[in-house]
Length: 253
Image (cartoon, rainbow, N blue to C red; front, side, top):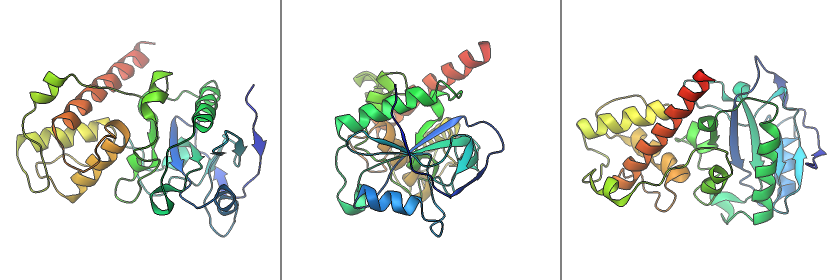
């Protein structure tokens, strides 16, 4: 049975409906105590539903039925009030600013157990299990490229795809800032269709680069450079196919 300690935060309000999204964060502070104190500070006006420490202990700050204030400005799959639609999980890690490091096994085991538990109560599609950086590529990096999204997907939470070498090679030269044309149109349309707020278009601009970086942090973490090489684009195509199949299956069910 999942063991959770309640440490109530005053920073919440009412939902408009049941949550159907999970947003994973890292705390991005030097210590867990500092992070929890901030998430419970009424003047900070931030919170999350859960905090998972490095030793695997889990704190519940806000009831799932309430709207915690963890996502901020951003969008995913057309949803612009991600706080209202989601459950937020803060994972203790100092982040890129204070010494980003790998997430301990005990911590990831606890995150998986927590997600298992949450999904027994709410209908949350795999395509709506995302990172903070996915809904806000222009301002967030968490939980970052060290977070083991592949492992989560291997136990049934989220999407993961690894393209074959020949599929990568077939996509030709990388796309980068300043490029224009059909390849960029297809790339931007694919990212938008997956869920990113990037609008379709034919120019590889700064917003495209940031969105590609966010995609890489989640689905191609080996190199996060904002360049849409063949591996990045082949991975995007594969993830889109998985998301589409899930959507069709959901309708049929």
